[in-house]
Image (tube, rainbow, N blue to C red; front, side, top):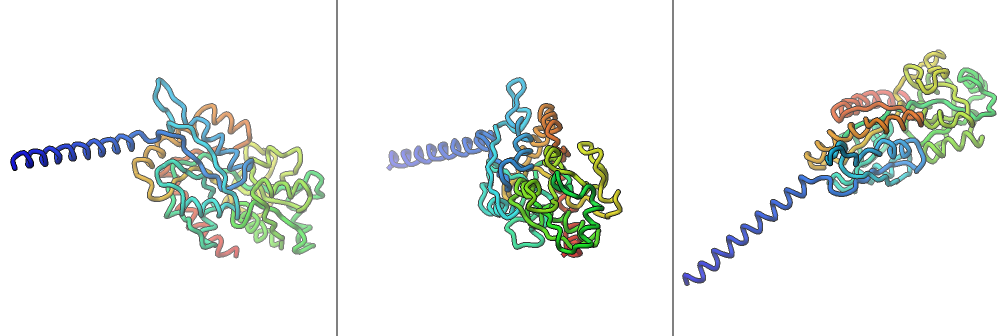
Length: 331
């Protein structure tokens, strides 16, 4: 009997020791985040402004100094899930993406917020967690290189004389381009026909190919394509350094504000461990602020606006209120 009790006690001690070791190993594994490459889901096609900038913004993710990570700590790769102006990818992300920090997503504001207001989406500002913002890309009004329009006012005059005849492309429904279109239509008191393209790249192709008379597109993509298009106006509060000769709509007497400016950054799904969010919130803005990354952004006409997690949370809340009111008046 005594021998049996000793054996059972020994087994209990061994079991407790094994459990303690397992818990210790689990804790160590969590503390080592990240220990493998991290994905970033982009809800738009390869080659578009979000995809293009996401690849630049994450270049310094694995950068080290003195053997220690000074950024995120692992390489970052991009995976694309385009469709429905971003809704396909963001619905997947909010519902099915892993919540362990190994799959982030690029966000676009006002896009995902406006869509969550208008459509029945799986995503909204309450089930996504931002970790940093890298840019703010205004929408611009563009026409083809051979267009008869040389200014936004000329286009407005033609649109007033020909209601519904002016076709205008954009990256999708209730993305920044569409919001700029709706604002322009109302502010100029004209009737236009909106033509959604397959992302910003598709929308740009429609303008270049003459399938539409005009378009709204990203300032960054448009600045790089100036040889093939004319840029007529910027939907922001002031002119941009990349396009110093292009006026704002407000300068032209057309009251379009900065509601359509495209904020871009990274986020994780709600439910991601606090320790992971804290790590990313601390390291992602440092990654965006890398000297070589900033140089590459400037070289490619990609507007930079770095914001911390807390700043992005505040921006999301402000945009939620503003877009709810704006869309109510534009619909």
